[in-house]
Amino acid sequence: MKRFLMTAAATIALAAPAMAETIEIEMLNRTEDGRVMAFSQELIEVAVGDIVRFVPTDKGHNAQSVKGAVPEGQEGFKGRINQEVEYEITEAGLTAVVCQPHVTVGMVALIVAGGDTSNAEDVLDARLRGKAADKIEELVAEATGNS
Ligand SMILES: [Cu+2]
Image 1 (cartoon, rainbow, N blue to C red):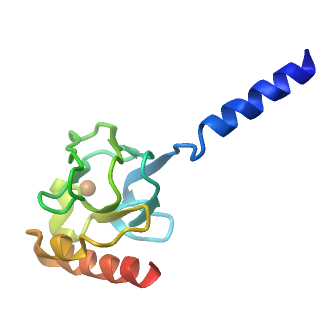
Image 2 (image 1 turned 90 degrees about the vertical axis):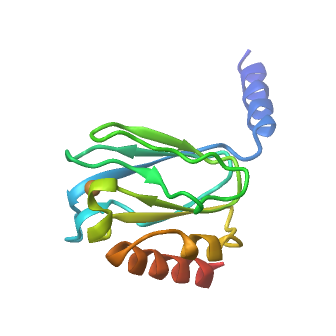
């Protein structure tokens, strides 16, 4: 019996070659490293099939993708203020994420799916202003430097 169970477990593991993960990102008024109005992580590296879950740890935030700054074929997302939202990654590439109330103070994040940065130009061309544009530019540079 024990042996049968082990075989079953091994078979299940093989059937799911890349285990999809859920990555939790907190929406915060202040991060542990002292950033104000920010996502807990700003450069979020994931695999296709993963889910990024934005959690409203502090009040007054949301998370949403930026129009034109998602991979081709990928459906964007828009969370409500103070609500958890999940973003299912179906395509490789970059997604720019903002908190609508705090986009002007630079509350942004960049998701890199499958190590693919081929839509970097689209992300840089997306309509972001002020600090958000500067921050996204930095994150794109970091992402393209990593890949
Ligand atoms: Cu915010």
